[in-house]
Length: 344
Image 1 (cartoon, rainbow, N blue to C red):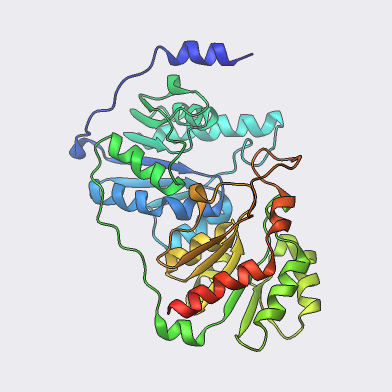
Image 2 (cartoon, rainbow, N blue to C red):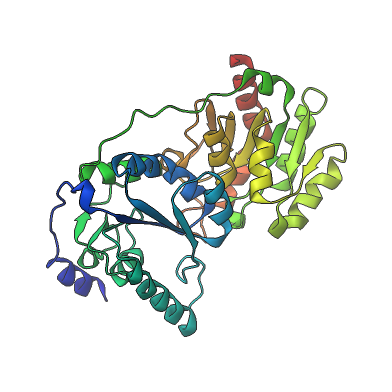
């Protein structure tokens, strides 16, 4: 019902972007407050922005769980935690009032340039609340009215490439990017790390598959599993069936520091794979019905395992499918691990 209205207001605001005067851009706001992995995939774009605007203050608004990691990686000059109601499905009136107050409160920062890469009308509306002089983003679900420079969403590009593409559209020069390379000494002595869970069960690989994979690897490699606080029951069930496996429990920063000394990461489509790829660790990532070309880890040594047949199941999620995840066998994942091992 509201789509015609959105298209109508968007018609009034299709101003093309122009190159920015670097000296006049003193404060830049970047928003990425969805998930931890989304922030990790944004790092190449943040590096481009810092290089293009060396004298500007860069502010990153991200979800609260990511703040400490973003500070550790020095992703921006100022990092602010924010929980949006549309990201966390919190629809109370008080949450929306808090969001409006937070967005308006950012006006005191006198932002010259604000950028959001999601293409969500709600994200674009949030940029508009900040009253930034220039507001740049995509219009995948509308909302170009709220931007000063709006662009068509490149649906076929990998998420990390989408952010770089948007920056190229506003004439920010691309850097010569170098992927972090794995340390062969670490590869030989570290552990194969299993990161089994995600907040959405449709994204998870069945417990029995993990147990079968561990049994195939057991005795050949040193193994570790990451115990995720919000999914302790799932992790405990795997651990109980494989009692000799090392268990990592700790903070996100602790996980980042520990992961740097490991051999490889095996996981589902989640934050852990992107963080491992950023570090330079080989990854094997298990996908279901979602397109891996859009969100797979982009490390130098990265393998993707996905179902053989396209999804034809009745799903309860627009993108994810638990039955497709179940169709991926332990042997398929094991073969990808062996491919990496035999390539080094």
